[in-house]
Image (cartoon, rainbow, N blue to C red; front, top):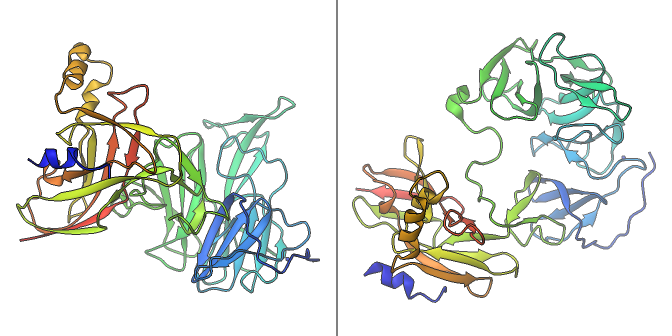
Length: 425
C-alpha cells in the first residue's frame, strides 16, 4: 500500500567618501534591496552595495558625505536611470525618529547623488516613470489629527502627547517644490504602499490601514491629475487582488534567516523590498509544476530542507496526510480554499480533548522522527485527499505541515513554495 511506501523511505552624492576598489564581501544584514535588470543594489547599515546577478560579487558604492546608511530605495521602473534613496521613520509604530529623515536623488543609476529637502519625515516613496516623485510622509505635532477624531498619539520623553499627521506629497521638479495631494484619511489611519495606478498609469494609488491594526485596509485612487480621491476597501478593489508581496510566499517556520551580503545569492531571497528573510527550514516539492489527468491519483513528493545546519526538529506524521498536512488551492477561476489540518481538533476548547489526543497517540501508524539538514523527511501526498478536482484547468497549490496541536512542546511548522497543477481531461 502507498502509506507503506512513504513510511519506508530513507527520510531521504558633495564630497564623496573614498572606497576600496576591490570587491567587498560582507556579512552586513541587507535592509533593503532593489534589482534592476542584471544589477542588484543592497542597502546595509554600512552603506550601499551593488552586484550583478551574473557575477554575484558585491562592490561598495560611492555616496556623499553625510548620506545616512540603512535607508530604502524607491519603487520605480527598472528601465529608468533615476534612483531615489530615503531614510525616515520606517514602517513601524510608534514612529518617533532618532534623527530627521533624508531624501537623495541619483540621475545616473547611483553614480552620483544629490540631497533633496524632504517635505516631512518620509515613510514611503514612489518614483513615477514620468519623473514625478511621490512621498508618503508623517509629521508628529501636539495637535490631534484629525481634529475631534479618534486620534492616535505617542508620548514623547517629556510626557507630551504627539499626534501623527500623515500626508501624500508630489514633486515634479525633483524636490524644489512639493504639492500636497493627501487623501481624506480616516481617523487613526496611516498611509503606506504607493504604487502605479493600473487603471490610470499616469497616476498613483496609495493604501491606508489602521495604525497599529490591520483589520481594514483602504485603497485611494483618482481618475484625474488633480487627485480627487475615491476610497475603496482593499477586498473590493480589483476583486481583492493582492497589492503588496505575495500571499503565496513560503510560510515562516520555527526559525528564519535574514538576508546578508554573504548569503543573498546563495538562497532564493526576494529581489525587491525590505525585511528580507526566509524560513530556515522549509518543504520542497519534487517538481515546480505537475500535470495530472482528471480523476487520476495526484501524488506530490515533499521533502524537508534545512537552509542551515541548525538543531534538529521533531516531526510527527500519520498514514492519513490530512491529519498534519494542509493544502491551499486556487482553482482556475481564482477562488482560494484551504483543506486538511485535521489535528486542529486537538486544540483546547473541546470537552473530550483527552480522548481525542489519545486516539492520535495510540494510532498504530503514528510515527515520530528527528530531522535535520543531513536527515530530511520525505513522503508522498495525495492531493485528491484534500480537494476534489472536478474540472480541468490550471490550479495553484501550496502545502504546509504543522503538528503543534498534537506536540505542544516541540511541534514544528514547515511550508512549501507554491506549485502549479495542470489538470487535463
